[in-house]
Length: 313
Image (cartoon, rainbow, N blue to C red):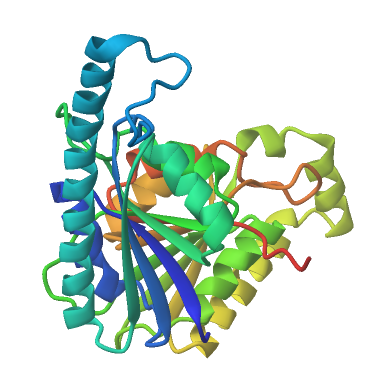
């Protein structure tokens, strides 16, 4: 994987710091172009004409003075955001000397600024902390991660730091429903470089809704009443792909509600990161509901990467 572009949203909060701490355990390659983006949650009034003229909507000297004061206050917050981005950038350059690192600080809605930047810059991965700080000058709101996951058209990692030893093996869990996005998540794992001894577990969750449908009955019939066997074979095949990438991989098929099963399995197994697709299929092979990725990014005890199907056009 060469020339990977990674957009990192950073607000200086403990969760944003945790996202930086988590980076050495993401398996990212040496050839990364990283952009650190800090967004001050302020509206930046437009610059008034330097000749003293009054543009439409600005009436009188008192209004002009108030406008300039408001802009000066907003600019101080933007400058603080720019300083935060530079600090994070320096840390990245120290930790990853081979990375190309840029920094930006802006003033606007944090979520939509990240989304717009992802649309224009076209990163392969966006990284955000799990939550922002609940202060007046917070830069990234708690709901930002959910908005970014919902609206960004690339993979998004919601980072949570679990361990202090960055050289320790990583425990990866993938919720596998065999949809294009889940297969893309599987592929993403195989393309990265993980610490020696890292392990992966493929979880296929049989949703009770699916088990009650005619689609499941059809699958059972096609496999002579052994639909579970076919799913187990698919899960083992996915695990074999991970093994071929140097991971110690296993697979398990579990009946239950996907949101609950994946979070519980991650807790019990001590996963460092859960990889999921954006949604399941609507047809025969649907095992994960479309809302699973949202629930997991909110409640998982570890980092979560939500991966979308790779677009060819």
